[in-house]
Length: 345
Image (cartoon, rainbow, N blue to C red):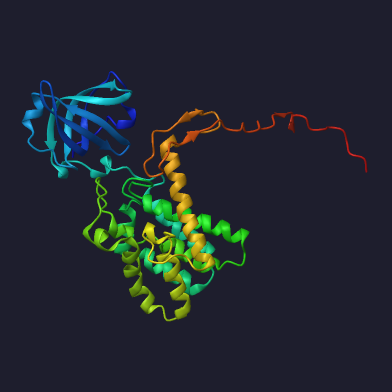
């Protein structure tokens, strides 16, 4: 089994890089001195652009997506973007390398997210039939395996292994908090729907590096596929009232909000509205995080604009952050500024 030591996140300008990468996109173009290949390479830490120049480019009639390659290249900044100029390249058999090295993955890992989701549902769903239903669905082996690999989207948000679980858990948390603010909401059915609303994405989006749509995903979409996955469990849920099942299905099929956004029905109950907005909120915040750079804290960079975000149809801005108060310093077992005089009885 071949190993890997250079990762995209660690590459800096002026380095010599000799390692394994996965080709995500490949396009042949023409320069003045002959044909060349424009490549996007990927590993588990990110993507980087690469160029395969003439005459080496002529050795490759086709470079398929998801092809593993071993390259020797030099890194440089071109047009304010880091790229690799490839000097040698050979194809590598998929079976020779752990494919997990080349696929972005959630943090925490998918297995941990799955367990966190189950624990959250166990703590926050109180009606036994709902609790039993979501547990049966999410722990069914073939569904669990698909969820562990599934992204939440092809490219816009949570587009990595475990992304669907991460998004689902976040939407569950948002719905739970909203129920604290609006206690008349049916918390049990809302959280159950949140846990299952994107279940069909495990079949809609292929788990490989391309994150392409499956045939059933293109023809049917994840909302229909999710209901299709749930139906065998709902048919056996004799302890759930049919009206509750109908409401659960409505919440799920309406979670995209509007017909033009792929929702078969628009929300018509309070719980359906809440799930729609919670789902949209988490997707938008994740999109903004990715556009501006995740991990910015109060001491991080500020005052800069992102590249144009097609999904948002705008540039987005990282503003200055309000300073966090400094923690009180402790002197002699007492916080600084604390009065040491005895209180009067």
